[in-house]
Image (cartoon, rainbow over all chains, first blue to last red; front, side, top):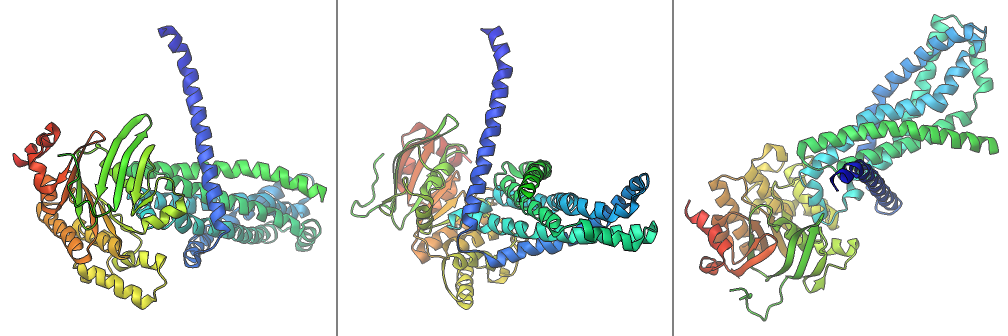
Length: 268
Length: 255
């Protein structure tokens, strides 16, 4: 019996872990479904939404602008260096703008917002959970998902794409400044190539991604906070998990979305 | 003692019949029979971990029983969906152990919150009612303070003002005197008595504080390891023959 147990134990543990994983995925799916269901139904909390929109949007502007400028600038430095080897440095604008619009804009914006906003949502809701403020809300017959989660979710669904557009714009400016001002690339060919090769659809491609990233990180942050347990330590764990899962999730979703959007683009 | 001694003509506000509840294979409530009569203060006395908080959360549908029936105002809440439960909850006000005030709102906003959510009153009426309830608990000078600036006893009083602002039938108190000094404990006891007298509410208090229980209770139920071992009038508790009740009271009277 004893030796048998020694062999089956690891398998059991692996099974438990896997069941636990599936169960938390199921819980998250239920939470998401509940939130989406409430989101399409009246009443919407306009004031609460505005407060969150200000926090997510206006509050993240500074870090997004800084990240955007430097991303555009450094990417231009690297790209000019690479393109000079094949004598195509006039393509630098196109390369940078395409990469930013389709990939770097949405991903980096989502990562910055996850770090700043996703963590704060998990901490705020987690603290409310462990100090029974969420229970108090339920006892007062107020649905905490409607009151706390929906305004945050909608704010992120709208503000992350908006921030992505700002990121795209300032990254282009950063790139222009480095290429034209610093590296003496010909201004005419820099701009005309962008005009030729970059399509508004490329920007839209990035915006689609940003909407999904924004919704995902808001749901993860809220879910982790909403289900926090065990005092200050529990809130800390929830916050860490919100940022880690939110960030890794953005990369994983990015791959999936890119393949879907590219395939879709080819069909059209 | 066992049986409920209250006038049989009245219908209980809450009637729990053979309620069982388990968490992860551990049975927390075992065949609970409990009636809360209108206008009275019922204290549920028990040690930490005896299942009394779980019992209270069943009364407002925050937990569902595995078996048994819970009637609130003559309606069976065990089979209700969440929308129906929200309606039932409006009959209740709850004062939490740590008050559970919204820390992002001022005192007066905390008390106004249920009114904003559930009534269509004008802003002036909302403020008037919130002020009235805060005056009742003697906190008119703390209106614009945040919960973090208040003492434990003051927070509990704000919690009570918030709990009664929608004029509930029943007020639930989750260990109202735990962690308070003797003088604040007495103030909180008075607050519970005043709420009963001035607002005519039915009160359910869960507690392990024998002194406070003897001051405020009309009826007492003692819960031990998920079973109600005594159910009697407050005046009769000292005659209880149940060994756990005797032990519980003895440790207090020896102090």
